[in-house]
Image 1 (cartoon, rainbow, N blue to C red):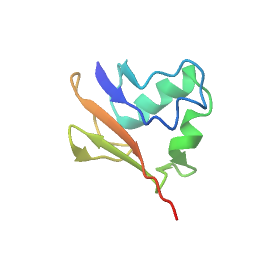
Image 2 (cartoon, rainbow, N blue to C red):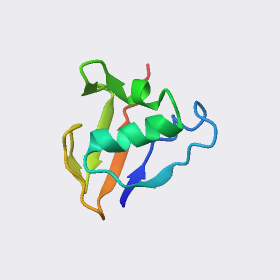
Image 3 (cartoon, rainbow, N blue to C red):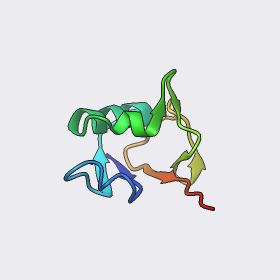
Image 4 (cartoon, rainbow, N blue to C red):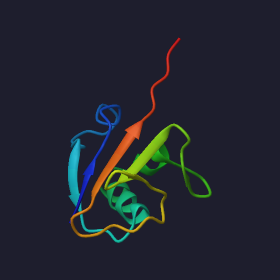
Amino acid sequence: MADVHLPMTLTPLFPELPRRIEVDAATVDDAIDQLEARWPGVRDRLCEPGPHIRPHIHVYVDRERAALETPLAPQSRVDVIAAISGG
């Protein structure tokens, strides 16, 4: 199972969404689908229509920049990072 680490900015928006969750998924897109099934609206926060990962969201699989079609191995670590800007 892939080990998914989510940004702290998502947890206030989705009750009971953990910061770390294991998913049995073949790709990053499949992993997001599983999150969406349990916490509707997560996909919209992470992806644009098309679908593409939103520009301010960065996904890494085993420390390499990833896209939705990036495959996941059973022991992959997936880090979802939200870019934060300020002024």
